[in-house]
Image (cartoon, rainbow, N blue to C red):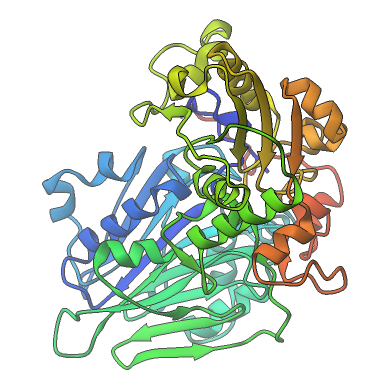
Length: 493
């Protein structure tokens, strides 16, 4: 898994980073604007680059750019250059391939059946293996992203229709993915056989009398943004094809027990989303309830590490009866660091994003609630900041189990040796980050918070490989050493 080479916000290397976000719309007036709004709602899933491809009934139109949705689609001239009533869009966080314009999705190619644009959220675990085979067959790769494998597999397929070619392609890939694709006369959505990555279907007003408009998106918050009605989750292993005849469902895979990514509930999804049938906000509060029951502590204040720790901290406060206070204030206006990131600036990086609320903290026994500990560097600095503000005791409670393994399914995590929990006990981690006590929710407690009796080791309900090391999809590319970059060409971003 290749990390991005562009500068990131100071301190951001100590968080698990989002996968990507996808949107597709069909028979919707101002399709590009609706897609851009949906992508704006999904900005939390990827901030490095964004792209939209539309179709006006005759031709495809595309605009891609490095940076945020608002920076790329706030220009009326750009939007005027994206006509049509159908479109797909993509927000990128790089898990394979550096952040270069040629890697920005949707990818587009011309085939004998017409044009095809593809946007992909997730990671393929046999992409390098497939690429070697495809290159031997004469395929010419233009990007360094694993998503291009889909394009080449469709290109060489011997099936006649685009749907059959797509089915042929997805049956050859391994990994976790949600896919949106746009052809001359069809919008397609695909979810991987285990349903690790999310994808939902919504309905809205149609652009003409041919029927309703349809929206595919990674999360329901995108539907709320564009005024669409939630219809249902795309099922694991399902392909939906949307055209003038409506919505068709195909299920080409042998059914398997789903393994939805549990970290969507802990951190990745927006709190106002409903994913896989559960309110993310309520799930996080229940995780906080369970955490308080498992790991109580005598304290004066429950303080979230903003923003992702807020709902769990609320749940912890409700169950424990200890007051909830905003003891740390986040600066929402800091993006990528505006100062050259020297060692001194990196040391101050947490203060660019977070400030201690001294009047609330001084003299108090404080419980900090956060969603995860990755490397531990940010946690250590936040604890130092809270102690410097006069806190008498600092305890930390984490609303996920210890992150002990890397993710290979579309979440950018450090290699295992750099994960604090992979090489230290709970007591050792507490000493390293400087807290009076540290506790994580148990993996059974996490499952209970999500409505299960506990984790069934024989048939887990979720993908929890980052906690358990139980990888449900083969790691084909990682069975042997390989060059982590997907291209021989080095470029300046």
